[in-house]
Image (cartoon, rainbow, N blue to C red):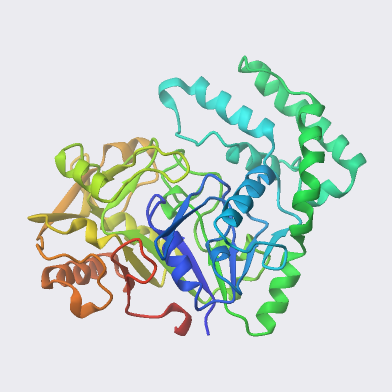
Length: 430
């Protein structure tokens, strides 16, 4: 049985939470391998809505082990708030079913302060960060000055590392005209939160190796999407980590052979939050209608998402760079009732046609979409749970999307409800 990695194939917000939750019924372990609490997942289970940011989506299922891997940047206060929130909704959460890698780097209050001060200083050139300190925390990790979860076990080491960290960040805050921070501003809240988070700390790489050897099925959960990848996305309008499936191994402490099948998630149209290029973005009534029907507002930020037609070029590129074996196509029901539906099949740049999105940011901003137009369908696809329930034109749309992106549609989602899913190819059986 193949272990499965789930990644976004667009700019995030593709519906990964529902798909991961749906797949977790077939898995024993769910591992979050990158990102932070800037990534929002909304799950609707038996009419109950769960909003997760940092916790793996499998945490709402009984008898599953959820793991926050070392590739994540970890805000301990956000973690405890989220744990308490889903406990209040009746979900059983404890170190028996939720573990955090002991070597995970922490997001501290100074990271959020630097993140927000930088974004404010950019003015009209804002990248569109959530201001939650994700980028500065990853910078500290790479610069080898991060404070990690395991550091909370040694007060003397922690104090020394906090002072060194602030020596760097206070220079930045001072230069941006923002208030500086004292060691007490970090140490006092850390001392308070430590007894609450340390029980969840674990040697995750070792635990995962034991589970793999025991034949347990592991589901790797990514955050954001392929086009927000720090290397392969629309740089610099990207997140600060590798969002492609290649990071599932490094971000969890397992070797690359641990991932057997890569499932990419994409909507039947395209959305994006924040700044950056978006070739198929719609600024008309159709774009507004897609946004309203799809309830396109960020789970974490509440920001309205930009909406546009499906971009087959971009998704195909995500499939190639991410090693995606099959696609879960979500929100097909949002396209119900349109007279015609467009799909981007190429780009036009300075008089030339391209079959890929160039890396240069200026070129990305100038590309124009080349569309194919499809006849829409009037019958509803909402809640369909079998291929036979879909209108003929919807079937044609899905089949042509497969041709354009050069990958099969393994799953089809027709509503936010967990069971409103059509399975064409079970990734765990691949």
